[in-house]
Image 1 (spheres, rainbow, N blue to C red):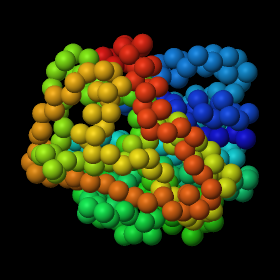
Image 2 (cartoon, rainbow, N blue to C red; image 1 turned 45 degrees about the vertical axis):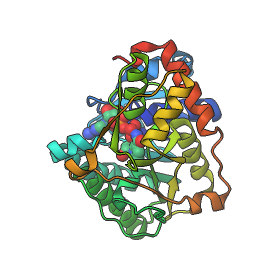
Image 3 (cartoon, rainbow, N blue to C red; image 1 turned 180 degrees about the vertical axis):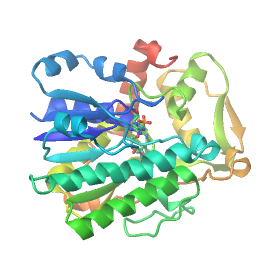
Length: 329
Ligand SMILES: NC(=O)c1ccc[n+]([C@@H]2O[C@H](COP(=O)([O-])OP(=O)(O)OC[C@H]3O[C@@H](n4cnc5c(N)ncnc54)[C@H](O)[C@@H]3O)[C@@H](O)[C@H]2O)c1
């Protein structure tokens, strides 16, 4: 297949690229606007990258999706069998400080990607995957797990723009017959992650024997599902083959509190954890204490994550300690 991957130089994007290269014979066309979170070094750092490029299996198309695809961009992309739309503004704090680029990229940008996708229906586009987030649902109560059919109630501008984009994608399925699927995931981790993320901050603090900042108060700590980005990529690949158009799928990992995750990291690197509790959720509107989703639809199709949380966490930590330039960049 020829697969268009938007945001392929981002964190999840580059893992998806690598997973597709290793597990298919597809050509992947990476559409990238390279904002502060995107880096081509993520791609070139992959051992076989240049080999795949020499085989003509990688095409990189520079483009900011806030603008319609012009003739140069559509010509460079050519016709595609599948589109995985990951390009987005993704950092909640930044969306609270300035929602403008979130509206422009996540809403208008998704519209531009959808218009390109619509033009590909006649030439045989088989799948459009909109990669979205748990945050669209807002906070989950203790013991509550959002289902794929639940209503959305985003708490911050990032989540709201993703929810709006998801609706737009669904409308293209209903109106134009776009073969679209919406996936929602949560707290992916893995190699070459941005150092501003919790796992990387925790690892860095532990290696420096510093206190680890944990959001919450003892007994009321932030909860998330944790999943390696390669497991996420595996689910996307699975859904391209087995998903049903017009469906929503949750791609989730194991649920741990931030303290439990920090404890697990500390045990892997043989350090003692000194947590510093910060009641972040009380003082920062827009931040939700707990996100939780059930992955009933995806499990019903028979997908299981290839690697356990412990195994993938240990591998990521070992890799990062061997490649500290990614931790301290
Ligand atoms: N990381 C997570 O745990 C997580 C959880 C839920 C959902 N998601 C979703 O997964 C997707 C990927 O997330 P990520 O963590 O890899 O994000 P990221 O910020 O690491 O990567 C986003 C990529 O999109 C590109 N991009 C941003 N604006 C663009 C524009 N206007 N035009 C073209 N390219 C642009 C960036 O250059 C970057 O490479 C996003 O859609 C995000 O909403 C991520």
